[in-house]
Amino acid sequence: MFAVPPRPSNEAERLDFLYSCGILDTPREDRFDRITRLAAQFYGADVAFLGFMDDRYQWMKSIRGDGVAPWIERDRSICQLVIASGEPLVIGDLATDPRVAGHPVVPQLPFRFYAGVPLTTEEGAAVASLCILKREPEAAEAFDLAPLGDLGSIAMDELELWRRNQELERLAETDGLTGLANRRAFDAALDRAWRRRQRTGRPVSLLMLDLDHFKLLNDRRGHQAGDETLRRFASLLAEAARRPDDLAARYGGEEFALILPDTDEAGALQVARLVRETLASAALPHPGGINGLVTASIGVASAGSDSPDSAETLVTRADAALYRAKQTGRDRAVS
Image 1: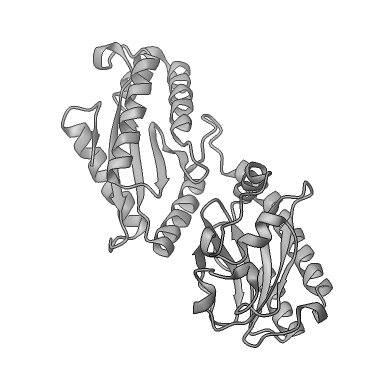
Image 2 (image 1 turned 135 degrees about the horizontal axis):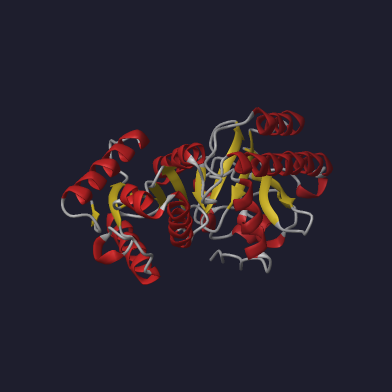
């Protein structure tokens, strides 16, 4: 029976680098398509693909050929062997090689030959794999791995360039007052989260949050006090975005947003409750607020695998729920 390999010892560093790239669930890019195209042509392969592996999935950034899904669960992929070892892997015949005996996916594949190389960081963490597949078996000992390794190095150079560009973009997508993501970053993150929902069928939730009676706080205590309140609330909201794919953003003025991928309505309401409890514990003063403290109204919207919604209608639904929260007394979460 196939045994899932243990996670590499540098798994945390590997994931930190991968998430810092912001490349998961992004559209195809010609810079990566060129690499898989060259790999397929050079080796006469039926398929060449480049896949990034997070803690649960392998995401195919580029695929040349047919027969490979755009994503697969990590524990069901062949490339997990490359990620676990950080070393190239050549399998001459998938049907007979003992390393994949009992693998849950191999019998379903129309391919017999596999070769893959890792894309590794300077610290040696394997974050992705560049692989080829052939329908017919081939002698592994005679396979020239060097060109595939060179293409993998080029792909890693492209990934590093991508990551640095993302860092520059993050500077342009950060709200200057609160340090949270700004509206531009929110729109991009929601688009990624929606594409992930479409791929995996997992739900996505959105919280829209508004500080109650904020104009009154500005009028009575001044804009400096108002700005400090926004900063304090932003820091509390950032703590609620605990997972790498969660995103806290300043949506505009005193309105904020929290994107929660892989979260259903019950989970989103739980997060909303924790935000309100944390805000209550912070006891931020508000001369005209409820009980003299800063409070927030929260609208919650979720979309499951069968939801016909779009990302735009998810925002509309969360906004409508936020309006209901304010109309029914504020300082509450409504879905």
